[in-house]
Image (cartoon, rainbow, N blue to C red):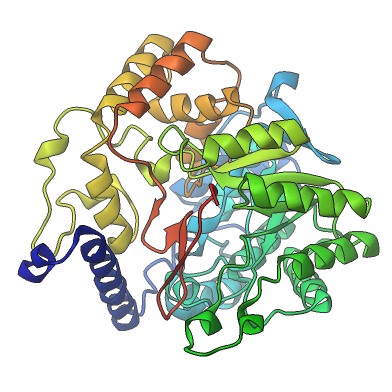
Length: 466
């Protein structure tokens, strides 16, 4: 800590992030992390309609556990027209389900392998089924995933491709129900051709177990350029391949293996280029997925939303709850009493439910957001809603579709409470004024960030404002 105090603030922040990253990677390697192997609950076979599913479970599965019970006891909901939106050819709820947190599944995918083999043969179901069932019963039939989503270690190191896609596809197949699923292609230094995009798309399609991917997105600009750090390396070695990837999506669209084209983390400048490129080739660009919440409106985010509206592109908002900061777990009073432990860990890690590295940064950010939390608590109390429902409804009122993560049926039910009502214009302004009074913008935590990516040799950074 004495060393950090002697460093410039920017260097100290980078040093802390790298030190924490190394600490967490070491813990993951040591742990084995098979603690979620038996989160699955008992079932015997797939069922189609919720009423039949519940009846059958009660007859043949007296030992099914609480996670599945909570999901199946949720009342079915039919969404009103105002709570559905169009993304290209798709009609989806104005609220999706993010799956990035489903990838925290043990070192090297061991948990996933056990669920697919040992537990399945014993009549068990996988750990995502309760969330999927709860979502579908609530009318939220829109899931967002990516080929790069996987367990903590492999995701951090750029490995584990397809783990969460496979989980999503397998779960929907096993319960025998259909949903809209969006996934993403990940730019990387070794993907240099149009055919490489097509091959990646085909692999995702097979893992999702569909004939055609509903929405296929490019996960980020082509910013991972390791050769740019080599002294004397020619510029051609690190030339962005964005247009190659765009042409790859055009080819996937023309071959009929994707229904709609989207991008992610594109700011106004790059978004206009992409939109013009696809339009010239007769392919609609229908979605742009960005970090967008009450705690992330600046840094180009709101400007990007405005350009999307101008171009007729739907905004999908990830981190709408700021990785838990805006769920109501953190209260506006007592934040200064949370404190940190000997290595910087929060003294109340149960407030985050995240990895150790993420907990560290979320706890730091929580100290700065009391004005916004106070305003959200007041609106929630007046409306008879939860803080998280207020946060999600704000995103909906701004014309975007929030995609909060969910790891339990209870979280799904709470998120669904953001539908069926709208904040007033005055309440929207009140919340934004309170957010402006905070001393931070939430760009993410740990390895999950909207402005930088940990790629083994360091962090590659970009900005929507570029």
